[in-house]
Length: 266
Image 1 (tube, rainbow, N blue to C red):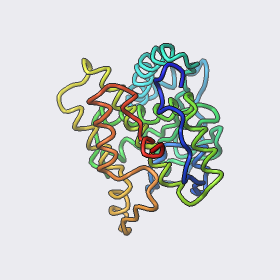
Image 2: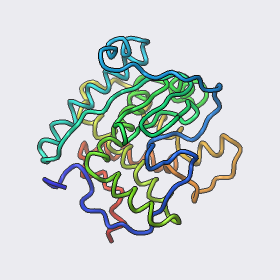
Image 3: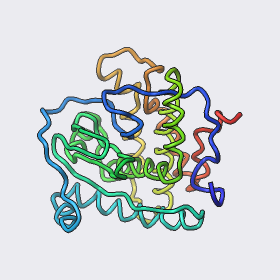
């Protein structure tokens, strides 16, 4: 990448393939494993002049909008320094179900990022699910969710997401392993963002973030669903891996430390 930052260099694409979720994971990133929810009812997020109304819909929405503003202020200068074109993502709220540039989606998928329209999509009721069913409440846990999805936007702008998607279309056998690396890098990017705003971090915030990362590890979600832990089916990484990469970003504050793809180039 120009300037040697914001990415992991030129990826050596090996042993990568396509994922099958019912929706195209190469088009829809950052979804959390399916959870129980009510039947989706279509409701598209307001756009443009409705942005102020969107952000003031509830406390969760306002919080997410504030997080997005901080994320833009953090990443935009880094892109400028690296000589990479930057575009701000859109933030979209919905209830039950929605349509994005990547197709239809329901709340059961959890928050996600759509590369096609560069949109972050959140049904804010997911935050209550995190708190009530996963023991991952607190404002920093919610900031982590937005920052993780923003990490996928960074991957889109730097070209990493497109490189991965191209390779996934060529080989289906090792796709999940690469998808895990994408998700762990987004976790690390979330940590980098938080590290650059340590002045805003309150006592207990970091613990909230780590608890959230641990709660949405693939192994933890499979166990809670009464399933056998199946590493070959992981798409986001284990709880230990998610905590490790979030912590790495927090400790270094450097996107270069988020090279989850390093082993592919050895």
